[in-house]
Length: 290
Image (cartoon, rainbow, N blue to C red):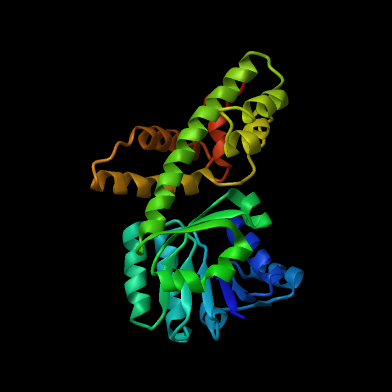
């Protein structure tokens, strides 16, 4: 049975690691803030490594789930001396497709296979093992990763060569931006109309306009609860990646640009660590704080 190490225990990584432990696959965990790793280890009965190199020693599969391109590059560099030849690296972070291809080339030189495997489904999906996993890499490596994907996700698909997973995640992030814009505006309208919000979410969520975001964030945004979730600053980072990728292929960026501007306003007002549903603050006539 594969021994899996998870690097990064944020909102997504912690849920994924817990499901891997339940499946009997988790080997070690590491987090940049060691206290979080120690708490996770104690709660889940697994070893917490004090360094990236210690974490990946003897691992058959390494999963990285960190915030940005530079973070992934840093953990790969730190892991390189201790990586086992023939092992497999799955990067579940959201980074640029070009960065994924550079990582794949670097790891290949060390005898390590690579799949870019960004995920979607929010912290709820990470916790209950129902993530959607978008993969780029070789068919053989994708097949090797099946037990890992089965532990953390409900759907996983090989989209093409390395980088295709990140390109697909960019599609997801642009769609998420559009849904955030539409749902926050619609909920602000519903509130202004004096409608019972829970009932609105229930009936609209069951119809043609139903989507994950309205079902999971529709009520909480109107209640001014913006606990992550998915932080504004992280989605802003992702959309900057999408902006560059769209520019490279002359694709439209209307939703990207609008949402980047709105997120920048929220971040300027100290809201960058709130859930992306905080976009509601800019649309609700009852909330003038932003």
